[in-house]
Amino acid sequence: MRRVVQIEAPWCDPAQALAALAGEAWSLCLLSGGGGLRGRWSYLAARPQRVLVVEADDAADPLAALADLIPEGEMLAEGPPFQGGVVGLATYELGGRAQGLGLAPHRDWPHLAAGLYPAVLAFDHRDQRLLAIGRGEGEDQARGRAQDLLAALGAPNRTAPGRLAGPMTASSGQAYEAAVAEVVGRIAAGEIFQANVARRWTGDLAAGATPYDLFARLAQRSAAPFAAYLRLPGRAVVSNSPERFVALRRGADGLTAETRPIKGTRPRGVDATQDAALAAELLASAKDRAENLMIVDLMRNDLARVCRPGTVKVPDLFAIESFANVHHLVSTVTGRMQAGRGGADLLQAAFPPGSITGAPKIQAMKVIEGLEPPRGPYCGSIFWAGVDGAFDSSVLIRTAACVETPEGWRVEARAGAGLVADSDPVAERLETEAKISAILAALSSDP
Image (cartoon, one colour):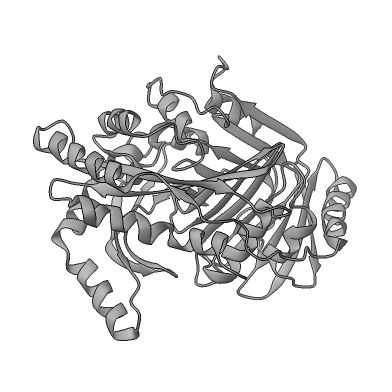
């Protein structure tokens, strides 16, 4: 994996290119929204050289095993941030393990699933370039791996079906409002300051429909900067996430960590005037700003565990970011990593994400466990770890967890809300419905 070779190929859309490989176990696409600095690069990979799966009852330390899987190698000076390495899924319950909690395991999902990919296709949205990057012990092996992955795209694109699923079944809105009221009571009693509690929507994909079809439809309708598709044996994760979890970038003075927690949501307006008013309302909301600030403080604390003293900063507080169906309030926290620390250490310190647990994190996770069944991929993370120590990861919100059965694909999606002292149960329920709307529309409406 030390040598690296790059081959340039004609541009194609990454979500469409995935169609030829999407049915293979361990195929993946990390799809950016295609706009701005954070949306420049998308990646496609398949056929990993090695895989790592850590089940709930495995005694091995999953993050130590992950650190051992991440290779070292040379980098192309003008290449994309990710040039081959490890891509994986960390489910929410791995966070219980990382934080010393024995959360009940999810029956369908491991704690960790990751593959070592010696070749990757990098899609440069800014310059409309497709780069096939191969790694190997020598130049010939590296070039051959890049060429093999490019050749695998030759199969014809899949014809999209009509509706992907019938109406999805939502968990009780009344029960969710009662859960909100319970959390508000716990906050009033001083047990916690905030907790993120979610609802579930479940259903079955239509005959002939696949998780890839959902991924392609979401990419077409509501592109998000941290969208992802990961196919595992008998399972698939389809994510349309707008949220970064943690990232590492290498510079002259070592690795810099960044996290961008989202807290605060408004739906998009029906016209430009209403849309601008809703964004302004969110920015001015004392409740949403307080909710966001609590998670910023939590993430500052998490990063401080692995960053150099005095380097953790908040360069951007309370920024508005707008997506297809919602506005969000987003902040940025950065820090310079301690020498010898890497992506697995950062996961150990910060996982699961503070924005989807609460504060204090450990107690909030205990409250969540009492109110929700095991989450699995929801509120976990899809991540990549490069050969130079760089790392990036999403928060798996706006995400469908798909499990293959003899009858077809079973699908579950969740949406949550951050609950604070003045949360209104009805308003929080409506927020979950705004957040899930893009996935429900993609599943249940005509193409």
